[in-house]
Length: 548
Image (cartoon, rainbow, N blue to C red):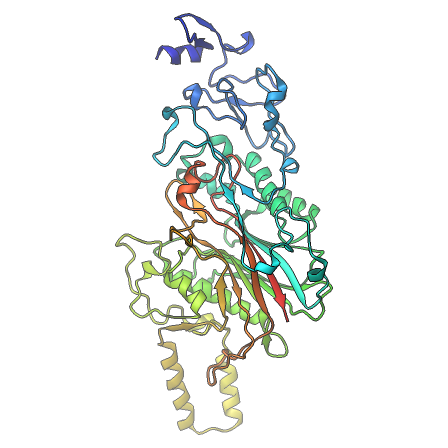
């Protein structure tokens, strides 16, 4: 307590004797919780905790407290002022502008270092002095030396000149909306308050995007005002074209797909709203976005269909999650089908709020799901408590939605009746098809006709420990994915089922991916967000080759 009183009064106890000496300059010795320093802009000191547990910049001294910054006072190129500096050169690491981020072949997470066990406010915090590295995993051996990824500028001319092959990279990233962060602050109790400020977070997010240099960005939880004022202008200056869909209702965030103008041309942009005023089941404001992109300078290469979404979080509403997914797949099917009857390659990114191995995840990968007797809270694999165990109804969504159990848009029933009247069919023949339609509606089998694979395997190959894509105070789990249509030469045809005939053109070959981490790895850097990683999700990154 004596040491604490000294700190509050601006003194520090002498390490040798009982004497005290001034710890702060005279004009700052009276500085307290409610006092403001006479700097160029207002900054508050964090004096409400022991000085050894105050937030600090990387490269700090133990006696230099961390200023509490407000986003309205911070510019993107602002450098923290040097406090009580005996030697300015010792604070070279305080420059955290995004343009000063060094390009390496590895992606570094921050190293969180604590001074004492008293800093340990959460049992999940751990001491560490190391740096966690995310390695690039090559999945195509002959391409290892020829990939331009994460700062590797060398590209073999042999592969560059092959016009029948087109290589591109895709990044999926939930950047954590600032409004959602503040509304759910209990999830971030392990974080220091200054690292949660948007003025601190956005430069880190922009730095990650610039460093990964993906050709296509799929972003979730993009807050509309931040998108309009900061995110879109900065990405456009980096050569991206941006498409955005804000959530319906009064929700301030949404999904964005951005692509490099030097590599793609936009053929169509198709927003998907999951809210339906006339369907009680669909009362949530989640959205999706589907783009059709044409690779530039490769006229013979098929277009690419890129989709991005953020499904409902609620673990106990698996019925809504499956319906939202079916609506997204129906829109993808409509956009990806070409005039010649073929289907172009597909990439689906997003936060699906479902874990690997769950029924929803299995449906995406396997293309089928029998949900008869399935508990509504087990669809996403998130729900572990006995709540939400109502059984899914058959069918899940009403016929008025206009989407079949094959996850494609249905032909309006009026058209079928008009056609039947034209050919003058007897009443007996008209009643028979109605029985078949009714039986189909009661089926508990869902299907989609895409052959999709996940970029990630979700478990470490040697140990089987789960990888995670999000980590906060309550949970660490995988919910973010990049799915892609695999190479498929044969035509997959199922006669008699409307909307299931499909011929995939070309195919996507996965060349490499940025490795994921385990929960234990992330807690060695104090979880997410932290000083260098400003979202509670990790960015996913993969590189593909499109072949005819």
